[in-house]
Image (tube, rainbow, N blue to C red; front, side, top):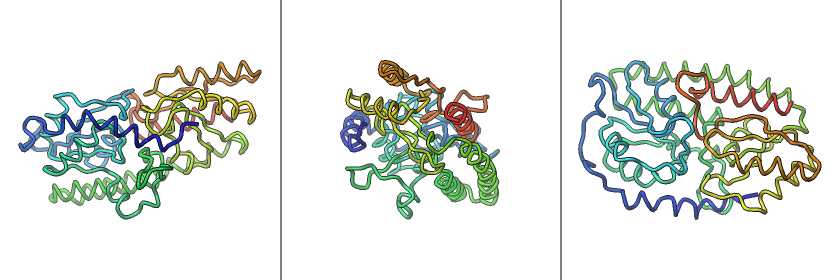
Length: 318
């Protein structure tokens, strides 16, 4: 297994380009990101965060997401256009906890001069017990928080508070939208739990391309193993591959899963290694982890991506 304490090295290397680019043109400017001046112009990093802000903001916000389908936030590099968009936004929301590894320092510096918020800010400050710590790192947490519905509910309400502070005229709308979205998430979560309960307990072992499903496993009672670490910048070494092959063979696990934002070659090596040991394991399907699916499809929303993941996991492991 790839140990999570590699995160320190990964982030230190990943942040270097952001340090060099920490002061970008127009960093003290103001104004909108170029959209309808009647709307609150919001720039978000990931699709999950953008989807959350869209649901809370409704018709009063215009949301731009920097990262589209299939984009790995751990390795993403900001373009000059991204920097202009960030600088011109009324509000910026990002995931935080160093998910946006190479953007992290840029976002932190931006927050010193403009309204820019990590959606986990309040949780990290007031409820760190809800976060999964990374072994070997002091106050370093797994950033894939959207896979825990309880954490995501709190993020939803935090976004509503920040939108209301910026646009008090529509504060009640933001709060009502947030509660309506939380209610929708509650209803879907009950269905997801029922589906996952269909998997026999001994088969509730989720093996994926990288360690992005820790919160998902905690929330739904699955044992989770990632071939790569918390960040995809961590390479899977031969020892990690062999350890997982041993686990798959000894536990009789039926399926492993690729991810839309991670190349599948390492997961295929698990399949090949198990076959060499006389155990047939299949690729159970593609999961959405760090990126959502294409816009216009169910998987292009947060609720749709989780729904897809649940169905894919249950169908493969049931």
